[in-house]
Amino acid sequence: MVDIEQVDFSYHGEETHGSLHQINIQVKPGECVLLCGKSGCGKTTITKLINGLIPHFNNGDLSGKTIVDDMVVAETPMYRLSEKVGSVFQNPKSQFFNIDSDSELAFGLENNGVAPDIIRQQVDKTVRDLHIEHLLHRDIFSMSGGEKQTLAFASVYSMNPEIYVLDEPSANLDRAATLTLGEKLKHIKAQGKSIIVAEHRLYYLADIIDRAIFIVDGEIVREYSREEFLSLTDEERRRMGLRTLVQKNPPYTLASATGGELTAKNLTVANKKQTVFENISFSISSGEILGVLGPNGAGKTTLMRCLAGLLKERSGEILYHGKPIPLKERNNICYMIMQDVNHQLFGESVWNECELSRDADVTDGGIENTLADFDLLDFKEKHPMALSGGQKQRLAIVTGVVAGKKVLIFDEPTSGLDYDHMCIVSRTLKDLAAQGHIIFVVTHDMEFLEITCNRVIQVGTQYSGKQDA
Image (cartoon, rainbow, N blue to C red; front, side):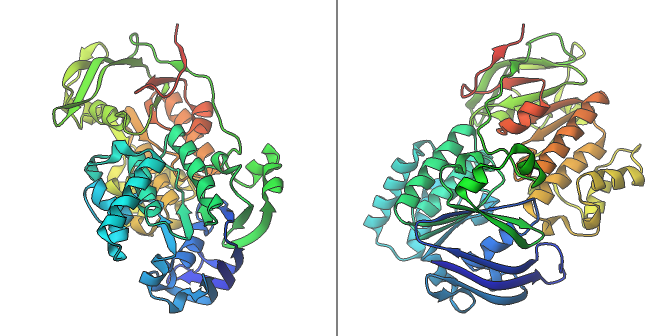
């Protein structure tokens, strides 16, 4: 079904980053193969060999051959490949062609000339199979990151391809949606479909994968059977830079409603007259890291935007040192690292991005040290948009660190990050808290939550914890 033979590849001008060396992979019908390894090791580049983005859209030096369903990828038009291969990209927005969800679900089928009656039947089946009734008749750009990711998978599922190529498909999904994705992948595999998935979040794939291919610096270091992969000790897994292989469900304590430096009292926020959440109260002090939990679309990011002065509350109030703090003043003391970091990277280079954000007290040496901590110093002359997804995420975190604001808000800071970089983010947040910052972290990452956050806020009812005494 998929045969990658002796492939070497390097992007033009990027002879080291993202390059591949002597890649040999075969995937049979009904097989699920995991591509794993640290951020930037070449996982996404391998997916591009299969869906045809290399060589049809991404230029570079390519040797070897990729064959998909008896078609040589380099010699086959993209429209022919798309009839067999369905791709879910790391950033789901990059694959949307419409502004409403219904049209997006039908787009691929329409593009392939499927009859209208069949399109309606297939879209209805997709909605039922994936339980996404709540995503119908929606403006895509009003959706949360997790909802967009679910829609991106659904739009591919509706086309019923023979081969699924998935790049970090769970990165922004809540726990329930991630487990649902796992169940759907089992169903797809049982139908004889081939699945190639590049992932950092591994626990939901434990019962699905047949093999795991471990990649280091563009080379396949080892191929594991499922049994071999799942038998890795925690020490071996961490040494490889891989995330947990078991689902985490850590205990946590809910934040108190009063007593801190920054307090929200009965906060209610609406979007276009529709209430997003209501009567949320919490309190936090310097040195604390507060996790913000809740299902996709519950309003976690909206709550943080309100806190940062980017959105006005309908009712309730936010207090700082016991006094109400208006929108503009909130904006002055808060810095928010967004879920989709492409919205906040404006610099001409990684270094320039840091210069645009840095506090007056942060020296060039301070920027260098922070970039080095996040493995980005070697890319300081590179354009931010040319970075990988994980590298962009780390750069956005660096800009937050050098901004020097009192309140730092991180929206899904570990999305797309490997184990080592997750730990770096955790240590950095703890260091910032120790320096007296107030830190909020919107996350679905229970592995990260367990080692990082002191207490949590719940938006919605998916998660449960014990109330702080």
